[in-house]
Each structure stands twice: as structure tokens, then as C-alpha cells.
Length: 370
Image (cartoon, rainbow, N blue to C red; front, side):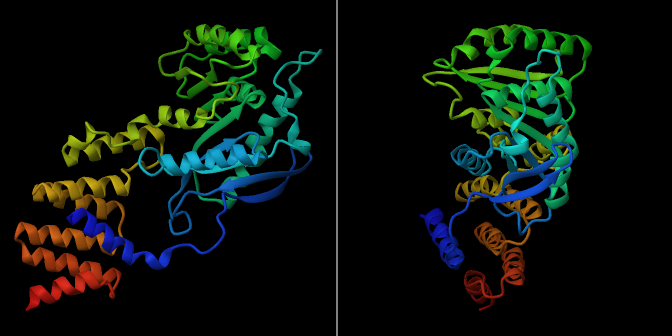
């Protein structure tokens, strides 16, 4: 009942914040590419809270971004997963049309891969700097492609492995030049004894023959990878070409340690902090627990009368996510239940510093002062 009442307070507090504008999944942008020699269109989806934040974000670069349905699916996956399970990420959908429509990853009669090479250079020299100039990004980048563009993603990894930290591939069309890719991958792995990238490949058990006929050969080649290179090939049951869950599963694979699962929730607060500090070093940007997860953990401890742990969790939450009158208010209520009126007053006052009109904190202070 207390949890329901608290949710009611939060809903009342934020009732006026319900958006009245149209729902949008992204914004189209255009710029001139020197590498490709013409105008390129891309679509950007920003994570919730981007406008009110000062932090830098990792970026997913998605091929075939001109497909609104595919882009909407990717944006929905990011929004859903970022609630609890993965860091907030900027999504950039690349429109593979016009001058950006050539990314062929198989060699021509001369042995050259002009389309793939040119497009890879475009990503490095044009698009990534364009995104970094216009958005707050950190250096962690993921490249995502499906079908033919999935084949390009693998090609990009083989020729410029350091350009992206991680690669997600759905139903790569190896059938266009299977032996070329198997040989190129073997040579690449033999020449790179230390790789820190991640690769996730998915396909459907009902996929195209161009995928099914060669995917196991690719898997056998990858078994020769150095231990530092993390890869997985995942068959999705009852799925055809380009399984719907490819991006979702790839992100969960990469960021599996970033969620507070049932076991991690039992850790000491110091151990939780240490876990996320190690993740931050691994990824190269700050990785922190999600606010909603910490809040629920603290509320559960409060309701179970584990007041010391609840207080510690609320303080950790406030340190990571300052500026919430609600967090200070609930911390104050926890102190009240613990029997510490002075600390409760201090928390309610902190709440009112953020929002002087926050009625719940006003009422509790009036009770304490009478």
C-alpha cells in the first residue's frame, strides 16, 4: 500500500509534464560527404533526457536507416532496454540511398571492393565526425547491419577493426562471395592476436539459403579467434531472414553485466559501486545503475524495515542522479521510520531546495516542527 501511495504522489507531481506534442522517433539530417561526393541523409533518435543532460553518449550507427519500420524497431528496442538493462545510447540511422547506396562488400573482377572500402572511409572520415560535432558523444561506437548491410558490417570489421567497439549483424548474406569472406576472416584472425572488439551475429532457422549454407563455416573460422575477442553466433528459432530481435539480443549480449539482476541486488553497496566502476573502465565511459532500479531496491529495503541499507541506497541514488525532490523526500520518510527526526528534516529541506512547492515535504516539516 505504501508503494502504491508513493507512486500516486509521483504521478501527481509529474501530471503536468505529460507531453502534448506529436510522438516522433527521430529527426532527419543532411550533410555533404567529401568521400562519397554528394549529400547524405541520416536519422537520429536521442535517448530520453538527452536535452537536460550534460553527459556524453555511446552511438549505434545503423545501416538501412531509410527504412522507417526498421529504424522504429531499433529506437523502440533502445528505449525499452535503456530503462533497466543497457546504457542510454544515441541511434543514427544511415540512409543507404543516393551516393550512400554503394557499400558492396564482395570483390569485383579486378579484385577490388570499391563500394565497401569507400563506405568504410565515409564512416570514418565524414559521418562519425559529423555526429561528434553535432551531438554529445563518447568514443564507444557500435555498427549494426542486416542482410546485405550485415555483410558490410563484417567487412568493415575485417578492414578497420578499431573504427567501432562492437558489431551487430543480422542474417549476413555470405552467399554472394562465401569463400572470399572465409579466407579474409582467417587471414585477419591470424594477423591479429589481440582484439578487444565484440561481435554478435544472429540469423533465423528459416533464413535464406545464402545465409544458412555458410553461417556454420563462419562460426568454425571464428573459433580461431584470440580469447580477447568476444563473439557469438545466435540462431533464432521460428524466425526467417533478419530476425526482429537481432538488435535487442545483440545489445543484451554486449551489456549483460550492466544490469542489477537478482544476484547483484544482494551485494553490498560498496560491491555494487565497485562492479560499475570496473564496467566503466571496460567500456571507456561511465556506466552507472539505472535510477529506477536503485529506487525500487531502496523502497523494498524501506518496506522491509532494512533502514540502514535503504538510506545507503537512497544516498547512492541521489549522488548519481541529483536534482530530484522526490528522492530526498523518500529519504526523509525513511529517516522518519528509522526514528531520526533531524536527518528527516534535513532531507525534506533538501527536497524543498530543489522544488520549493513540493507539498509532501512541506507537510512533513510542519508535522516535525509542531
